[in-house]
Length: 62
Image (cartoon, rainbow, N blue to C red; front, side, top):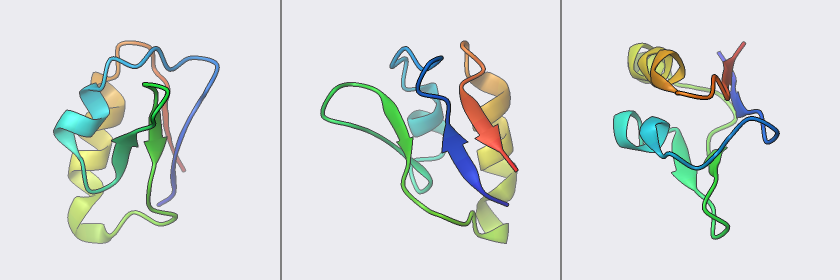
């Protein structure tokens, strides 16, 4: 599974980074970014939780 952030939707709440900091981080500008190209299987559930918890629906999992 691949993770990405929709830059047009992200408002920098940081919920994804709190839930799954191994996959998501905050940029210097205060917005989230995916820091792994491919989400490891052992982090898939937490990445899904991060996506479902994002108040702006900015986390994209493919």
